Length: 197
Image (cartoon, rainbow, N blue to C red; front, side, top):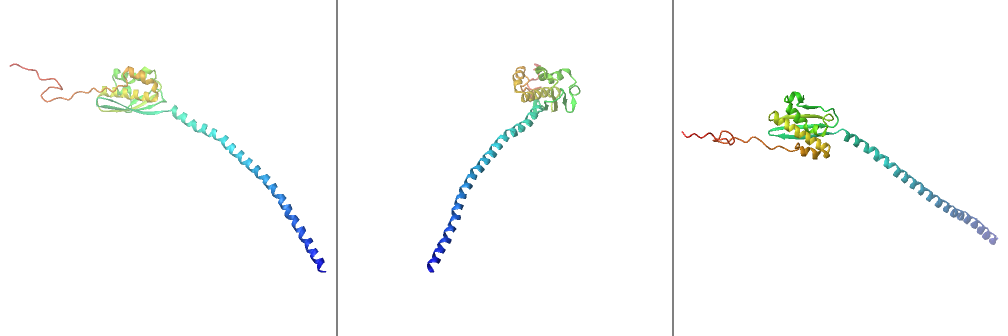
């Protein structure tokens, strides 16, 4: 009788080992699925890299619009007068000085001509708008200060115009001023007339 029991135990142990071998065969199937997941990740990365260039093109569009409509500030000086010039690239050739037109502010035709001289030289007298604030000095000093301010604003807008404006003398700051009076003299250098008797 004891011999039969021992054989029965051995038989029950052997079939229990077979399912373990089956589990081991299932593991390699899982390994084959992992490389497939890596390929999908690589595809996602390539899609993102393709989408980046259109974003740069859309960002460049607003910059072009800013270049089309420019607003430039420039300063012109002559004697004791100062002119602050505001330049607009979009306009119809309007020039206002202290919220007044040129003809009202500078009634003399010669001064009107000197103010517009840089624009006439470049043939741009009906394209840009100027708003100018002038103060100090007299009419002639203010007119020449405005002319210098307009010439400087045009150079900032287009540096290629610098050569033609400089040869005409519109970019030079005229430093001449009236010399002060000296004691013992009539004016800066005029001495009183000498009398013998």
